[in-house]
Length: 74
Image 1: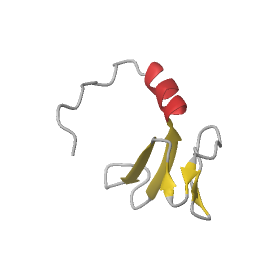
Image 2 (image 1 turned 90 degrees about the horizontal axis):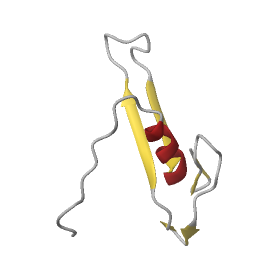
Image 3 (image 1 turned 60 degrees about the horizontal axis):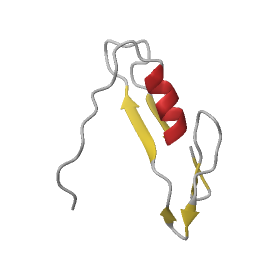
Image 4 (image 1 turned 30 degrees about the vertical axis):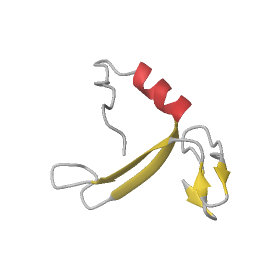
């Protein structure tokens, strides 16, 4: 959730750390525009999860997420 230039985790409500204009804590941002084959057709949803809440979400997945290491950094 974004409020007054701050980012909050939509799951736990934690305010993410920042230094000036830079967010110094990583998070997962999700945006979804629902389409024709959904009960939410035409709706747009957006939310942010802190790393801890993202890990909790992944622990509950029946099929684990694919995980790999990035080989090159820009």
